Image (cartoon, rainbow, N blue to C red; front, side, top):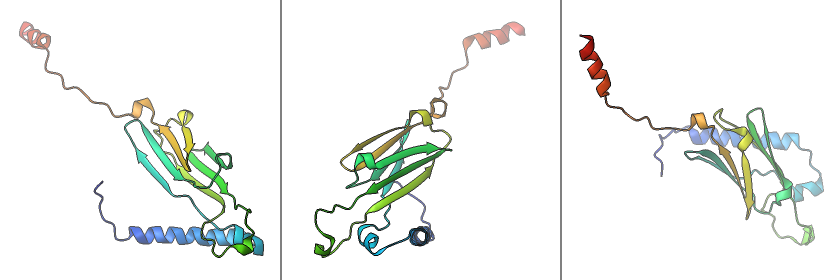
Length: 161
């Protein structure tokens, strides 16, 4: 578990961002009676972590078909777009409660300049999307070896005196 500095305003900022996104989605998407039941705004949960060689984004997309997911890279931005469709096997009026969110989602992430965008790859299995973003070779950390003074340098100093 990583130790991080506590920021008392961090949770407030996250709450503000979520509320802003909620209100933007409500204002920007027209609703009809039928679409209110079937579609609601949702955003998949995402984890991003870094290893020595790459940055990895993992998104939870349960119930989303792989063909309904689009990954796009443009202007140093990685965009995830897709849709979770409502299954109409059971008529809507037979439902007692609908808590899962359906409809389209859109997430975008700024990519650091050390990512090799031509080598980004993705895999999708059991509702988890993993996007692998390799680092450029020149940016990877490397160890610098400490060299001892060479004997040739010392003998050169003696000869020059």
